[in-house]
Image (cartoon, rainbow, N blue to C red):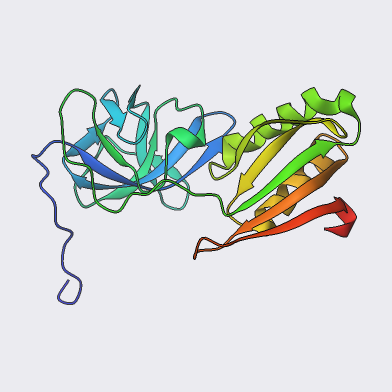
Length: 212
């Protein structure tokens, strides 16, 4: 107590909570780890994610000790988890501010949207697997908010997707996910690295996954 001061925050002020982490759970939807900076949060409260401007009803709050334990509320200075029937991890962005749905508050500083740094054009080896590839992307997006994708077509390769990830390792994980869960053979037609200085390095036609 002498060396570590108590957390600052006004428990009587409107709610402001910082999202520290979030992941997808098949039974509870998105579970978010939050730190309550001001105010209080309890089951039944209507909250708003400031980055997406979407509103939700709080279903459960609590903490991991080490298993999940429900609490009556979380107040300023406390860290715990939040579930609110959120369907996608992309709607609970790390660094975003959780606020009351109907009370305007100032967003907590420091939030930035995730910017993909590695891009690739992904195509299935069999054009008939295009729907399965799209389904695999949807499933992976539930647990990885950093993955971006949009449809792409090529005269030679057919229909595929343009993928964006934070790093090459995340891209390789996507290929592995497709192979293990959807039995899809995916290859990369173009591989782009974007460096912090703004320079883009282009690896063209890398070929099959084995060559990556």
